[in-house]
Each structure stands twice: as structure tokens, then as C-alpha cells.
Picture 1 (cartoon, rainbow, N blue to C red):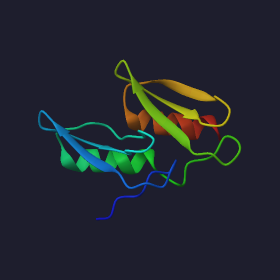
Picture 2 (cartoon, one colour):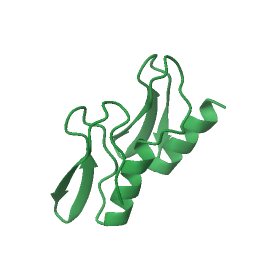
Picture 3 (cartoon, one colour):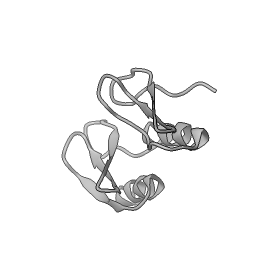
Length: 101
């Protein structure tokens, strides 16, 4: 299965492994999925943060998802519109989609 390139800079992801966990991350802009001991979930989370079907807030810029203090946030890279405080990446993706309905 081919992984999508980063939606922010179009660079392919880099695999990083530490303590049995896999992380897919863009080596150019640090866009990343979720670190996981489950390979399939690490790949799926990279695909989630690089979805091309998520709505844009402004200026046709893709949403960026970040994890801070074990909570996930989604934000527009153009205007600082944000949603956050989700306990999972899936929640942040769904929260972003709801926010822009």
C-alpha cells in the first residue's frame, strides 16, 4: 500500500521507530500521524492527518492536526481557526469536519 504524501509540503513520510512504536512523520514540516505499537494504526493515522477530503477553512490550506498533553487539536494553517481537546485523532478529525459544516 502506498502512503499519501504530506498535504502541507507534498513530501513522502519518514518512518521512525522507538521502543517498539512506529511514527510516520514528514521530515520537512513535521506533520505526523500518531505513534503506535500497532503498525496498521500508525499507517492509518498518517492517512487520516493527510486526508484530501477534509474541508478547508480559508485560503485552500489543509488542516493540521497536532497532539499536545495527550489531546488532539485540528487547526487551519491560514487563519488560526481551531478545534481541540479531543482524546483521539479520530475525534479531532470528526470535530474539524463538524466545525466546518
